[in-house]
Image (cartoon, rainbow, N blue to C red; front, side, top):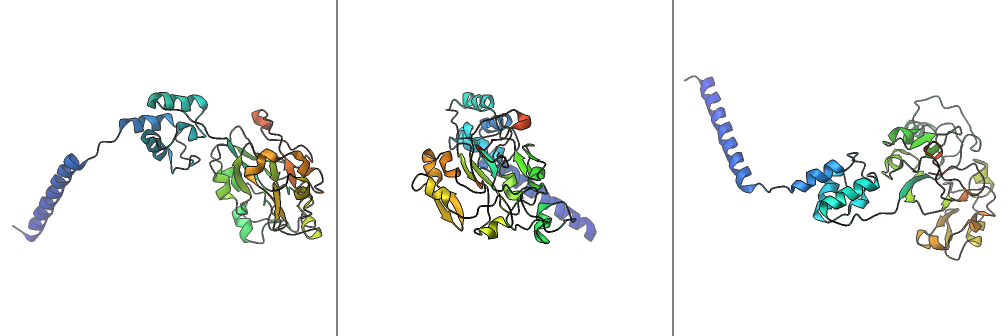
Length: 287
């Protein structure tokens, strides 16, 4: 037998030996998977968006079948879909408070001062690397729609001011826009949170408003007018205590000279206008 033939025979023998070992191991060591996992996964949307806190629908299905999560934690599946999963497993559907993505910037083209005409790659991430686009504000929205491109649910569209508007009916709080924004302007917040600060400029007074006419100037009037402990100033910006939202009200916005803090009324509109409207200063659009 030639050397080549001998080598081929040895390799074939080794391959067969390993195959037999693997087959025996599979038979005796295999742990049967609960067939309900596959069925629950089929009932889920399959978007693998991660809004439930799990890496994908398969992982979420495993958690639901194991009793470690309730079906209602999926914010993409509709009410009927969640109930179908609950009925199949014989568990409580559960629920989670609706959350939406909100942009913490109102500095559109009419308000944020421009310093240059940006002509590079139409991407916020690219503009952030080279001169920060054409706006004077280094903290505001770049307006090049990375968030809109990243949104898997068609829930974000750019308005005439170059600001993203979130469709609250379509938003699933998946967090894609949060990850896409190089300025960290998107925050996933409870839908019930109505007091929203639309500015990230850490400057004060004329330094802030010279960059954007609707920037927070750090005057702290909202802190003084709000319920005690509801708002505190941090880096010249108001911070709302979420656990105190029950004490909130539009009064904190009344004396804001620029409208940087807004009271979201929470009304829902049809899909073509599905945004939350602030109680005053119509420059702001909310998701």
